[in-house]
Image (cartoon, rainbow, N blue to C red; front, side):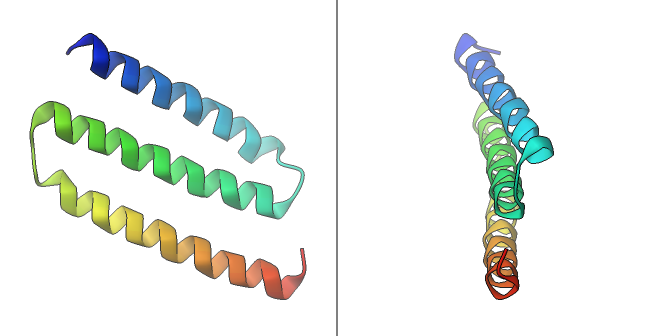
Length: 86
């Protein structure tokens, strides 16, 4: 593994740790929703780095599916929170 890949994974791990802190200590429901969405995007970025490192194209379908699910989940939860008035 090259140093660039190690730095990428270290940055993603640090960002995920900070997002987990926000997820656990978030003062409101919208903060936790944003933290979950950000965590999913970090996982997607990690899969993308792994796909680029291993030069495997079959990860791309997983990336697209996870991105679509994350987007739809965020929209649905956002509509729920808007109706709830939180």
